[in-house]
View 1 (cartoon, one colour):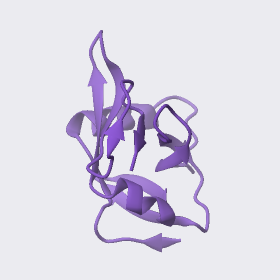
View 2 (spheres, one colour):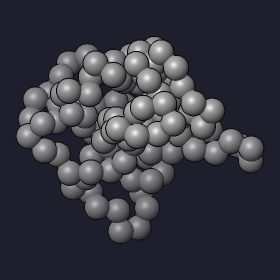
View 3 (spheres, rainbow, N blue to C red):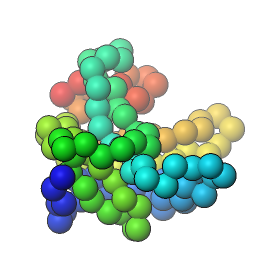
View 4 (cartoon, rainbow, N blue to C red):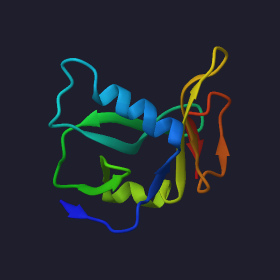
Length: 114
């Protein structure tokens, strides 16, 4: 596992607060890291991944405001410069992604094309 010095993605204050809340949930597996990534699928070709997971040999490690994050090295070309936000309103609740590398996005905001 490699540690990178410049964070490939950023988290807004709201996202950091929500992730910290999740980390404090009873029974949370403290051996897991916040995984940021992509996978094939979704309306426009690729879907964002934001979950807690174990590190693998393919991962780079970085820290954002004390939160340990991992990302597969190969995903950097899709995610470099992306901002993750948390929307807590009644109409829109969940994590959102602002990706400067996306050539198009879908209406749900969780799928994109490059």
